Image (cartoon, rainbow, N blue to C red; front, top):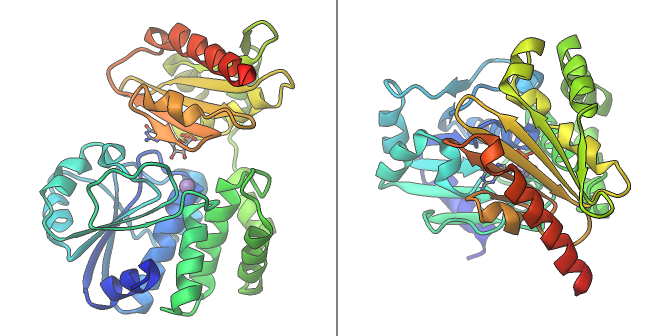
Length: 333
Ligand code: 5GP
Ligand code: MN
């Protein structure tokens, strides 16, 4: 049986589902989770969406009825443990569930993973994974189209479009293939407005985000013989002064990548617990390998590391050095 028909069978033969995505969810995370929510609701299933982190304000339009619940350790463990099927969407390791992973580990029922990241952890009963997909929303589109499990209605379409648009950097990253554009076209035919989705997600900045960005951009640092590695640091103090949350800084690392000499960009951010590093690279530099050394992961050109008990300066020099070495080794090839 193909993976598509196997997942279709899992859906058709079960009744209660818990869906979740990773901490600090992005557009692909919320869009994919909400697309699966609507798919299952259209099949009259019992569905709960429980995420560890709140939905960032610029993605709340994807959940107008507020069906996403934020994890509460007094209410949710029972549901997470006992639902017929648990679906991990847009991530592949329980560590990205934070405390929810304790409940995930206690499950005996089916655990499904739908994702496009490298190296899924061997903890799932069923995987629908395509590491070449542009987004988890891309995988979901193909699943629905192949199995015809439901008709793609507007609610599913808008979520899949948001997922694919955000994970392709608005259709400019490497995996923006003709197929991805064809899918986007079909979703637009279902009534999605590219103008609205873009504006809802990207034109929602508070003045504080721009003033913080200004401050951050003026403190970009370059390293290596020719400025091949660029860094920015977002301190907890700066977030507080500008009234900004972590998710607002998601695109900041891309500004470093616009510098011609930069091959690897690193953004360090002080979060509530420890620090988070976002790594970006150009061409065939595999920053996911660098991230993995610190317990992180992601894609070849975009990865992340979350270090709950470290200050960013404990890894700052070392990561820059390793990034420079990676570039040198790559050039020597
Ligand atoms: P970002 O830097 O935008 O948060 O994340 C870039 C990519 O790396 C995303 O695909 C994300 O899923 C992945 N990523 C971010 N943080 C982590 C992490 O702590 N662990 C793992 N395994 N992947 C991460
Ligand atoms: Mn994704």
